[in-house]
Image (tube, rainbow, N blue to C red; front, side, top):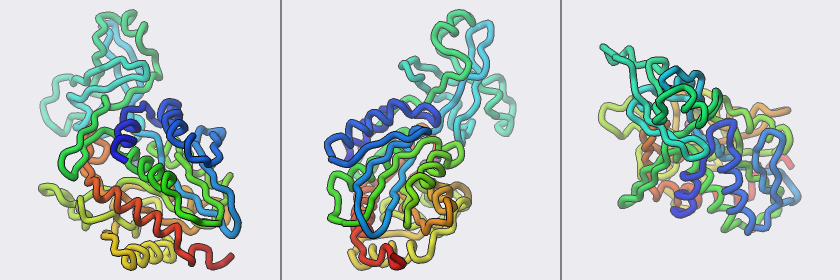
Length: 332
Ligand code: CO
Ligand code: ZN
């Protein structure tokens, strides 16, 4: 899974411009024999047709980024965030555009830390004039954090582990697909970071009876972090609640039972702020019982997020075991 994860991290894919990450995922999926389809918004759907129930498994493929809004006479760029960006993470970071153009983020004079806002920051792409800059970028050109991946002990440090870790997890489960008869749709969604958008139309189209999202969640295990009962290395987290979803009790309990009975370590997650694709999916049509398997992640939405590799492999085991549960579709 590590090599695939690294490959996914190096693929460009801010919300709204997912072509490159989608084509990498398509390549990885081509050998699996699943039916592949890209829908109108760009969601990549990998289907194994079947009878007796419909399960949707979603991981968003987009990542946070920024978008050029203005180019000044000296060639400096101003930008707007794509998704949840913290100016403290942006200052001093390097970003990359789709064509590989690098930029570094500087700031106007800032006297107090609280004055550090996105509109005080600018992007330097090495241009000396607006004309030079315009040869390289345009208004609306998106950029992402410069890719990074390293593996140290059990820990992985990387850009966009949110949610390339979730994508790698789904790919791992697909590669070692459990023998099930029901209908299965794996969806690599677009535009999650700007409002769970791709998942909304994909869920409408696929009309699942049950859904799980796979995404990252925060932890409470770093110095003076806000209290949160999730730690790196203690297993995947089974979501109870976030701001987009209260996990369906049947799905939540079945995940817990599955982890218990298989001896897979797990944690329970209540995320004070944030959401996942399940937030959109569960409100689709007449409602879809939904839950989330979360990968504990430090420094979410920074250029250097950290996960524990064992949590990722345990999450794959949990998902695979869950898919083989007999009580997935009790009403059908
Ligand atoms: Co995110
Ligand atoms: Zn995410």
